[in-house]
Length: 137
Image (cartoon, helix red, strand yellow):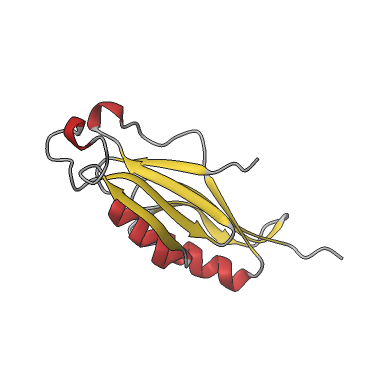
């Protein structure tokens, strides 16, 4: 079994996944629109170019997402996506990228449990925790 994250966006999924591709060094493997799906005829008005399903590979992790019509969209809360890096430099690059036009909840810095740890909500409303653990030994 694998547990994957699925994110919902209010109409900007394509923009968000392009941002994640660049910010996290990922690779988009699927961007399917409502208009190109079997559900095209049942799509909300004006949503033919919105994303019904997206997939991005980030390292060995898969993140999926879609645009959710307004009556099905809710603010992300009660969770964070956690990114764990091998080096402080990697954590710093990702945190800086995710912070662009985002809101920093906790500055990326050394802590008692990590070489680097910080929290940020990106410009799309997705909450992230960025971590580089202290080396054991």
